[in-house]
Length: 184
Image 1 (tube, helix red, strand yellow):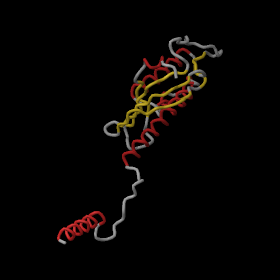
Image 2 (tube, rainbow, N blue to C red):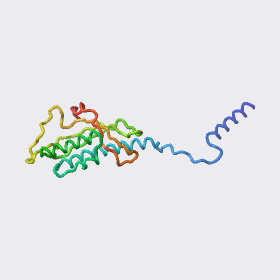
Image 3 (cartoon, helix red, strand yellow):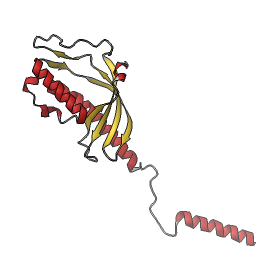
């Protein structure tokens, strides 16, 4: 009898511990954690920033004589911004422009860091088939790099110095130039 009462008391105590003594709202087990939401939001924003960078670069380099360097500031930062400014200055100096568009075929967000300088590493497959530097007559001015397939991989770091602002993601570094010879 004592064993039955002890067992009954233990079951009652366990039930009260698990359910509480009053009514409490229960957590919804399907609600994602904020961390997962933040990571996915960062990936989405960084991927959008990468696509925007290709669009902005193409627009700014389509008419170099009439383009201010600040045109490029909305899509890149750090070393990539310096390189973009140099590409614009070179096109202005030598009188050529770019035609076409680089197409992002696929992206894979690899590493997401949201503290310090927020950044996302992205490996992207890009298609450069329809993008080239031409002179005023429409003739290509840069030699074709036979080692680089027209559709190849790049690895970039997209940064946000104003995180958690979703509007401040910029391409900051092209991280692995060797991979640019890898077709995709």
